[in-house]
Amino acid sequence: MSTHRRLAVLPVVAVLGLALALRSPISSLAVVLPEAQRNLSLSAPVTSLLTALPVLCFAVVGLWLGPRLGRFGLHRAAVVVLAVMTVGVLARSLAPSGAMLLVSTLVVLAAIAAGNVLVPAVAKAHFPDRIALVSSIFGAAIIGGSTLGALQGGWTESVWGWRAALAGVAVLLGVTIVVWLPLVAHDRKVAPPGSDLTVRQIARVGAVWPLVTCFGLVSAQAYAQLGWYPAILRDAGLTSAEAAGAFAVLTGVGIPTMLSLAALTRLLGDRGAIALFATTTGVGWLGLLWSPTTATWLWSALIGFGAGSFAWTMSMLARRTESPASTAALSSFVQGIGFVFAAVGPFGVGLLHDATGTWTAPLWLLVATGFGLGVAGILAASPWSLEQHLGQPAGECQGSSEGRNPSVESDDSVRPPCVT
Image 1 (cartoon, helix red, strand yellow):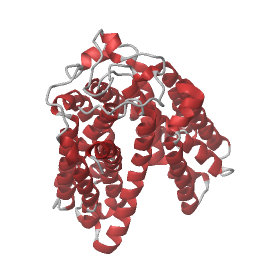
Image 2: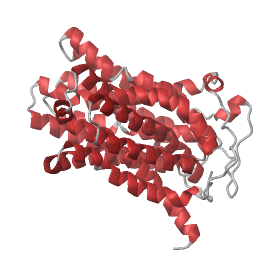
Image 3: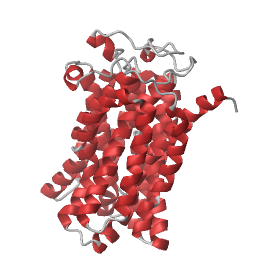
């Protein structure tokens, strides 16, 4: 394979590998958490903290680290993120105490938070006119990585124990590092335009806040589904197997939906696509309110289809900026603040259920956030770019016409990759 073709294919495989790696360490721990809790004598508060750490860490670390990634070099940053994640995963598998398990998990989550911010910037650098397609692949890989981590953890634990199950994720991480290494030589050493953007500057751009709100509500939906969906169905009268099957339908439908994002966007436009995702999400939760044990598969499929809103929101992070560094800065801000909003999902649902003793109020909350993300998304879909609002010139990359704003161009146009 020629050097040009190899450099065109490698970013696709690299982004796919990174996306697979961003949730597998979390799901692999969730599968073996009871065994770790028993063997390390973890207290209830520590166990609860372990389950809440992802949202908290994604918010704090993502907000701080994102603007600095552009200066470091996107490909170097990816390799460092994956290496730190690998060290954390291996240290976690060897943790002799609950405190060490907590510290090593924090290391892993900090690296994942950086990876969350990094992927949209890499997509912007290499595929400025394929943002919707790459975002859909990224979103599907996120779900696939979560499933892969859970399957790997469950199988490995049954054969070699919970520590081996935690360490098993390192295999995927190691392979992904190898894929990223050839790209490191193509990092630009000069800080690209947008790398000096501050949180205060971005916060002053009013157009950013609908995107923050949309991302927060999308994440609130995702983590509420992950944490409470089976429990809601079990309390409604479904068996454990039936609830697990309905949850599998929800997650399974989300994968092809995300992969179809580019086609849906071309067919319906940005506003039409996010409105469709939000409507199906809200209607799915209304169906559970109305008749949770009748047509449960249909309500699950509707909510799962609505998961396409995640890929849509991730695509907006790249399509509302003019350079990869600005994408990293915007991604950091939106995800950092958005993950704070995301706590409304898992924590809000749990608190309302504890306060009322039923799932009615929590389900109405999920209905509201489902339709609400559509309103925020429609506002965020209006044509704008961060640089235009800040009065900065568009970034340019050697070998590409990066200065153009992809938010107003067709995804069908092709131009050479921009390597930052």
